[in-house]
Every structure is written in structure tokens, then in C-alpha cells.
Image 1: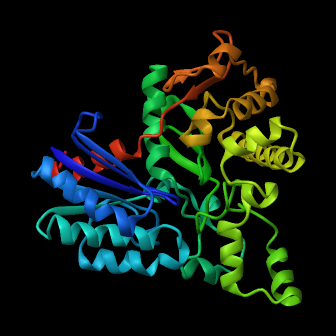
Image 2: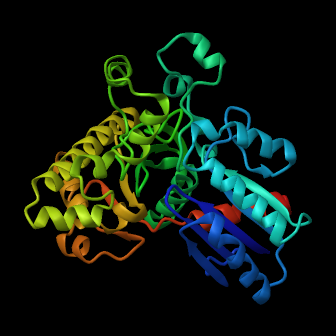
Length: 366
């Protein structure tokens, strides 16, 4: 089945076209600006491959109503538009991608929304209800979780790598990219995750703050005159690694500056690592143990110092990694030593293939 996947993230768009179930693309593109680059890219694709059976879109937030992959009907599009406020960096651009496909490929091709929140639909109320007034929950204010597409892929890939039945595994998946989240997976299902009502909660990220004392926001509004728009910009675009270091939201730049002796870069790295470890500890308690810890996405796959520090601090679990393998890792590799009680996996993020899999399932009824 010839499937085009458009994967919109917080900092770029990845396009993948392949003949599912093969995971090798026949065509791919990595775009920095959806408005300027997607239309010419799709025209280039059509010139080479005029037959497209379905188009799958990563949609970050479908709200309380849409948690399962579904065709992008006008009703579904309207619901996604209503969630723009809750995923401001993502949903608007993803809808623009849908409209661009309408213009370039035509309205006859089936377009499918694959929701980043879908994998977390298995969360129990204790995990998704916030401790505010119950009316919040009735209004749809709850933990949704994000990065679910890649968390789901990594859960399946980890089971295959370990040659274990997914139902027997307890996993902590560390999706560490420009956006970052953890997912506790038990028996192949998400039981907890660090992102919440929006993709802003949880871990410290590239330019996003992650969780912080809500009293800080009340203070800034009351005593510093901050508006909602200012806070939204600061928390999403001027915080995290960038905000603390004053240098960059890119972990590669932070690491280089830290090695060169920049104290704020070291502070940013230390805060990032501390908060990551604290949240891993929470996931460990929820699961009641762990069989494997998975590192995935740009930072997770490539930051050797981060993995080393995290694993060193988790040595009390009986976790040991091979320093040579960690320094020169291959993707989809177990870097734990043979006698380690907990496996440590590096898995290449593959949201595009997981989205294609969902499209194939819906179209074929498989």
C-alpha cells in the first residue's frame, strides 16, 4: 500500500512515502517551514510517484473526543482546530498540512489523522485526573499525554529486540527530542506519562519549561504584569535548555559549551538531567520495577554524556552499561552489559512507519 506520511513536530516537518509494510522510504523530505516548503515538496513527490493510496498525518491533540486514528472528515478537522489552544506549536501547522494535501494531491485521496494522544487512552483515572475542582475534568481538563505514536512504536520494537512477549514487559521509554516525555508501559499499554493537558508539562525540554510551580505564573501575572500571550511565548519558546543556558535549545550546543567551560551550559545540562532522573524515579514506582529503559529521539539517541549520567545514577537497580557501546552506539541496540539486571535500549524514533501502520490498518481493515 503506497502511503504518504506527514509528521509535524514542534520544530520541523518530516515527510515519508513508502510501500507499507516496508520501512524503507521510496521518497522522503525534512522541511523546516510548512507554509513555504510543503507544497513544492508534494509536487516533486507526485512527479515521481503519482499513485498514493492514503495520507497519514500526525495530529498532536484531538481533545477528549478523538483518541483513535480516524479519517479526516470536516467534523474531525473542526475538532482538531478547536484544540489549537492546547497544542499551539503543533495543531495549526498540522491542519495547514492537511489543506496543502487537498490543494496539491486532491480531495479524493483518503487522509487519516493519527493522534499523538491515542496510545495514552489506556491511562487510568488516577493517572489522568488533575487534583483541581472536579468541574475541570467535566470540561475536558485532564492528562492526555503526547509522543504516543513513538512511545507505541518503541514499546513494540523493544519487545522484538528483547524477544519477549509485550504483555510480560515493564518499560520506561525516554522520548528526548526538542520536545521530551517519558512513558511507563506495562503489558504493552501506557500507564503513565509526563506530558499532560498540553505538551508543556513534564520534563525540561529544548525551549519548553516543562513542569513548574503554578504559583510562579500567578506571581508574574499579579506583580510583573505578564499577559497570557507573554507567558505562552516564554514557557514554550524561551525556556528549557535555551532559557537556562542563554545559548541554545539544542543539546549538542549545550554539551559543546559545557565542555568549553560555560557555567550556564553546565547548569542547563545538570537541571535537565536531574529532572529526567526524578521523573524516571516516578515511572519506576508506578510500574513497580522495570525490565528495560529505552532512549529514543534526537537527544536520547545521540547524547552520550546524558545517557552515561542517567545510567550511572540508576546503577542501584543493578543497571550496567557498556561504555564502549554507549560511546559508539548503533541504533536499535542494547547497550547494557550481559550481567545487567535492567536492559538499556537505544531505539531510532520511527513515527512515520507507525503512522503508516495505522493507515494500513484503517484502509485494509486488518
